[in-house]
Length: 382
Image 1 (cartoon, rainbow, N blue to C red):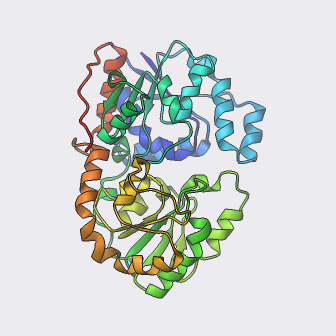
Image 2 (image 1 turned 135 degrees about the vertical axis):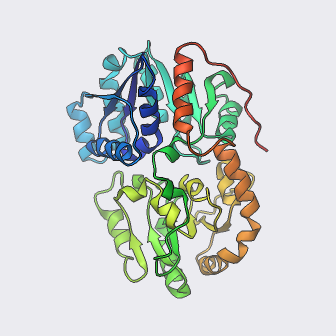
């Protein structure tokens, strides 16, 4: 069996897939080839395998990169570049028995003419947000998801059937060191409040709440604030957004806009308080229940909306003047949310052991391709 793993987005995606391709490559009669469009992604893949002693013989394929793709990258139109690269490489991918990806947009390969290979999705992230290309899940022959929450969502929206869906856990946990899931270091001067704004227009909080948040942190004098934005904030950006974040750095406020710690759970493990809007990283933070504060400057009607399930896990702030009280009370009010956090984490990542998801995913891919795949009942989410 010849399996292609397709990496046509930034390095964040490789943390969800690297351990799976390594596990699959260790099965007999499985040939694994990785296609990478960003040089940084290859560097992250090598670091993940080195730091976690991941084995398996993996070939490195070469993607054709047309001039249009290079131009789109220079213009920071990375989502558009992704589509151009996929279209250019359909014929090459057609030679494989399966193509594995972690981006919904890989479903476009079917519309671009990919016929022979099975198309397999490894769900990246564990969040609730509605995304524009979610409908492309229908093009995948098999979807591997972290827990019953996402599996039931796929079924309820008729994006996939039970026969096309398998709960395996969260392979990213196998791609980061065990220390990422343990208690944070006590060496920090003050507890760290992690601010993790998303890029989605109409939902992200940094445009309106960045400066009020920094003012509140400085006035409270309880936390060191680490600003760690979703890396897609810097798409279509020629330095303006980075300068905005840099303008508030100083004293107890720091910024990480580029390091691997944005991707490998370093920040979510270290922090004592999570402040954000709609990023799925809140679920990585909550593998150890801790206080959360969510920012809703746009006044989104979120209650009873499953796409904002995570906003039931902490106080939600809609006015500037309420930021300081929310931060001041976050620890004392955590008792109100802890049980709910534990329940939702169980729904998100399932009941299987945290480690081993990559092997379960690899085994599922192997069974599917060999025609040995059995349909297991999916647990319902309350």
